[in-house]
Amino acid sequence: MNFKDELNNRTKEIEAVIREYLPGEDGFAGKMAQAMNYSILAGGKRLRPMLMQETYRLFGGQEKVMEPFMAAMEMIHTHSLIHDDLPALDNDDYRRGRLTTHKVYGEAMGVLSGVALLNYAYEVMLQAFDLSDHTDRIIKALKVMAGKTGISGMLGGQSVDVENDGKPMEKDMLDYIYENKTSALIEASMMCGAILAGASDEETDLIEKAAKNIGLAFQIQDDILDVTSTGEELGKPVHSDEKNNKTTYVTLMGIETASRKVAELSGEAVSILEGLNQKNEFLNVLIHELVGRRK
Image (cartoon, rainbow, N blue to C red; front, side):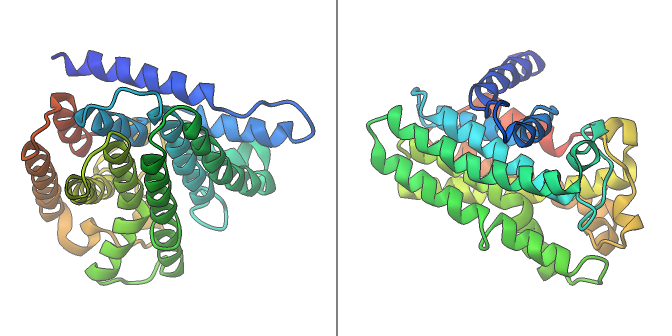
């Protein structure tokens, strides 16, 4: 398997799916739709929909029911990035190598377009009922998406992050933020892939555990890259954690220990996946590539 070629092919597939579900830019609310589309078409790894798709394939899924969930996941993730960049939060001017949404469309439209993407994601996911007779799986996946996105997931983690911005933190609070702000959407992605393909409850629980490890490893690697990478590689400012006095795994334990933690978490995740009866070689390689990335 040529991983780079396979990755490019899958990314193109996901881009096509996302474009299929974007809102039209006509009518009185056309400007907000433009802002939504500007953000979601800014590029990126498309990690979450890719993990969703590959987990779906891991359990033998073949229907198109996965596609609205893939597009919706990228919308939810993009909403969080738009709001993270706002002046009231991280106040960043660049994301993925170009101006952030609020710098192009204004702060108010940044707020509104982010909220609109979050809501529109659920409108898109509901279209899955037209694509499959397995309504029980769709309902179960919707419950996972709602739970992992809200106060007990991504938004809860973001709120604790904002509340403690610039303050010293112990590791347990930092873990709470990472497990919710970052891992929750990765968990939702992989769990929905498993659920919609018909995985058992026990298998879905294992996927959740593996995804949690992947999410933590991904975020810790992000901490490391903020120190070791360049703005050109990342497509956003580096050393922003230090500038904002943020507590990270690097500030708590140093780069070497943080790097070992990334290897430990990703290794555990792959071991869980390899312990399943089903196999997906691309998914295993993808995990290794993500946690060892330079951007």
